[in-house]
Image (tube, rainbow, N blue to C red):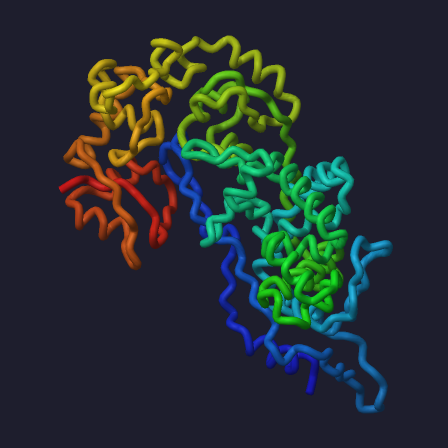
Length: 473
């Protein structure tokens, strides 16, 4: 049986469904308001495990001519696995699952892998620099390839996000800020620094890069339990037990195959890749909240470009009560950016928040959102929007909340009322099969009103279980 036929039988055993990291990414089109937040519902790649019968290395059939002499390889599938450069930072056995993923990335996932390679050059120089500073092996940067396909907007069904697919708890543990206004798991530079620190801690705990990578996938607790149950710290021996999930068992082979191809793509048939330019940014510190459109103008770039450099900002402005805060601007523009920001009027730098007691109000006993909105002559909806609250939110005595400017609040409120036909909105959990069209019809409003209310722009995909605001009937 030829190698191509044998490979076809192997791949036929696994579903070809392969979710692309940026295949569902949101883009701005037409004249959409690019100053608004970007809906991010991207799913990172779901890479399958090898079939159970791929335990032993399959025999290799060598094609021969009529004279009986061996023929040279005629396709990428017949390329002999290239050993990783020595010294490599971890022991790499001759495991058949690594070759299985070699074949998988070259066939079923070929188009996706080519896209990941094209995106890799945008972040690899920065990532390698950070990992060198942290004293880590540079090859670890390819972990982002199998985690997110080098997409900072990748978002999994388990709610992991960013280039390194951090969960909320782990991200916060390593200094990443996550709230209704910002998700620094999506910041390329900050998340890479956090991933480097996390990997260092995992290696310190297990003294094995294989186990550290497995723990990155499954969590430290599960890997520690597996080590205790098996009595060994050899990842490749633990793989033969039932102490880890199949996903974690195949995580390291998948990574090794990806590294092998990514470091020498032409050898595996990945030619003519349209590589992207490296991300050339520097970090500036912002001392006051500001609108995204204002920051983009100060940096001398379009709003779209600024959001590409700063995908962590999920709304129209930087977070209130979170200063100073770092952001990414074009390389060499830091001094000009800071000078432009310093020359802006006070109100522009303060993100249109009222200059009353510093733009905030401290909640007193007995006060409610309604009484606070009435006191400052703003709408309830504008007050909730300025603080990331909903009608069901509970406020507590002593908490500080933002007070928006009256003119801004009233204009925004009238815009929402004009589109939706009602000033009262409520929370709604998306059910299976629901779409924006179905919701607009059910709640007697328009798709544009729902988009405006929930800051949904461009191509938006609703997820089952997602919470959005709809008109109260």
